[in-house]
Length: 487
Ligand code: SF4
Image 1 (tube, protein in one colour):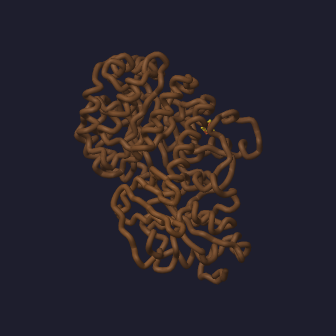
Image 2: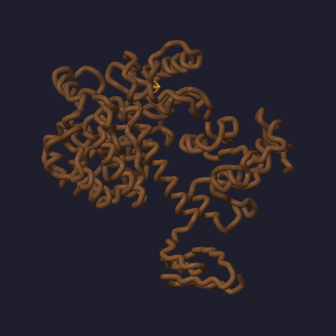
Image 3: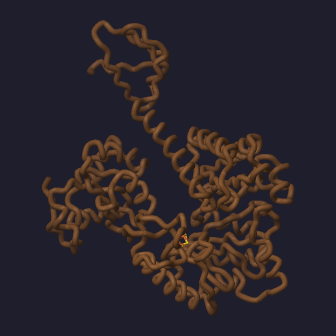
């Protein structure tokens, strides 16, 4: 293969070693077209492109940029087993994880994304759990908590210093607060520390919730704040942040998962700020209250996702867990809110002896379908291991979800073993689906010597079925068939 390494652009240190390598590009976002000269100068001419399933599907029967063939990742690996892959996306964390299942890290490269292979976690270096008198670099590490004070700007500067030191300690094997954390793994993570995710997950003065979930661990804080109003409220913190122009950009995500936002007395002022700023937002809400400004924000398309924990599939169990009888109201609001662009996720936290039964789990699943939710999240009660009965119910849920094209995700509050259990379950199901796609979906319903009967309708759009038969063979199709006489 001839490589073009004489581009006009600055070459990276990989350029010389790219000679004679088979290079594949991953991803076809809009900016790729204008960046091809630069990309080729860095990595060499690609033999083909691959990308997300939507991108691969789009270029199934045509050349990308009028020149490059596009294949699925599996096809690429069969055709070019030794290829080096270069990702064109600006944000590529999820792609990096997918690629690591198939490539060794040194074969994966990024043109745009600020990623490097190291020991870290998905939170480190870009995430702050912002609290009244402390912060955490994540929302799960019990030891990763740092006392702080001052203005929002001062606290962010403190966070930066703290994370830098933590990253250095991890790299140098110095004992640190992340030791033993299940999220600390080798993988591709941000090279540079840059805050882009501000999470309000624990409570601030004035925060409230209108439910009393049995597993909630912050109820005491609500009570304490009623007595002691010291510290900035969520609204005051967001207001200060909105006055820092360097943070008014679409790379910033604000997560509001502290109490029920729609029950907060500053709810409308908070939504006014969210609507005015360029930020994205993620909401954890119980969906019991309908708020017009929330609906207005959901329509902007700047919602990363909305997470609602149903934990039940019957009004009785809902009431038992949440202390309020309003499952029907929640379902009504899930249908009323404009959630089309909001990436809704419905969560099920398994609770022993309360909701670990088929009636609730299937009732939950029916609601998922009824409100057109495309992602379900499975959790346990703060890392308590799932019982065998719960695991059986998870297996059923995953099977049904896969069949209906609903994605199954995991909450951070699963034990290490359950995390792995669900990963294996999801990937087994995926492999099964891939196998079916590769081999077509025809079912042979009878084989009698050379006479084969298939249970299939072969007139589906773009369907291609190749059946090779010996001389004097007969084939009976239990459906329609279109024969191309040229072949
Ligand atoms: S405690 Fe775990 S999740 Fe938190 S920053 Fe450390 S490695 Fe990441």
